Image (cartoon, rainbow, N blue to C red; front, side, top):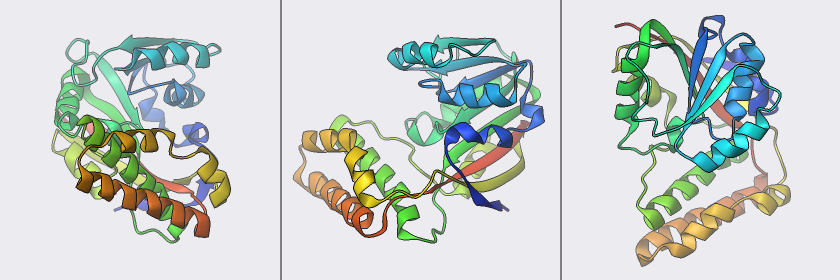
Length: 253
């Protein structure tokens, strides 16, 4: 099912060349745009497209304005992406770049229903997200273990349960349940390997903060085991690169 591309992109910012021509419509809706990095990627490829970024975190959008200073033809909306403030059948293309694994487990279907509502017939949906695959090295698997530690800490400290990182087939199956037909997909590597010492200098601030807020002893112990596993693998093998699913869908109804 998947075409595995055996080379490494140095960063998400270099992924613009995987965006297909058909996704570069007049208006592109970018879900969960955050600080604007995904919009930047899209604008590098779709130079004539008007990009509308939407995110529930208004503080991130304020920073996105600075990140997109040299970009033309864009707008930002602060809103819940499971309740899109857009007319029915008004958008030709949409993207979700490193978004789905972060959204609430209970909102995934609502988001897909909203996309189905606002997108035009034969509209293109681009999904780029982290995935669980058969990893060739412990350092690659570590990219997923860190996500697990983060999402578990968040769930146990705040009650927010993310959809989390999934297998490629799980993502595709969920999306195709909502009248989106898969056109093509591939798995790519992103980022370079870094040493354990370098990784541990910058990793864990949010995870460790939320870990300290967990009140249930058994849940706290579960996260502690994950954190210790992260540290052990990092010290012995380093970190990265991580793998992304690139999947392109077409709305069928």
